[in-house]
Length: 156
Image 1 (cartoon, rainbow, N blue to C red):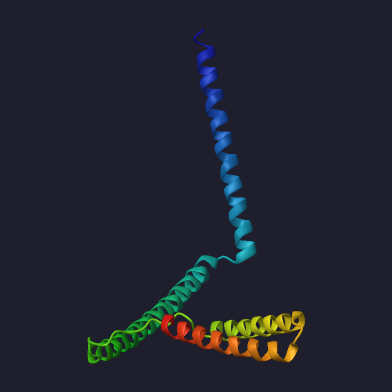
Image 2: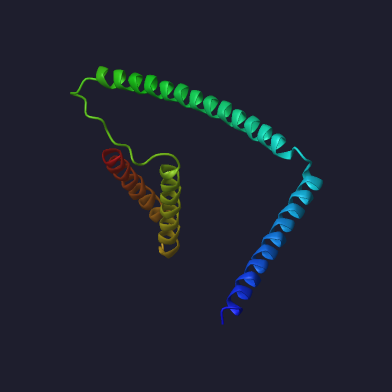
């Protein structure tokens, strides 16, 4: 029994030495392959490229930060201008909020004109006396338009 124990430890040691040699040869092959592909001193070139890129990005960052500071200064100056104008306006004036702007009023007016013309044509077409009805319809539409204009002026 004692004779088999030294053989197994010797065999185990030989197996470990063999594994170590295999791993060492794999590492050396990988290093040789890397040297063949990238050169023996590739790590120096990579380090130089990384350093150059780092400097480039650092300069770009500083440029962008300077632009941000300049734009913030412009915003602050503009904000002060608006604050000065707001302070200059007397508080007794009440500002009117205009919510009918841009093309809204144009489309509303066109729709109104189309509606009035349609109503006048329909009313005249159904009437036995077209000329009298046309005059009366135009008069009512003018009065309705004046009242609608006054209402819009007050609301807007």
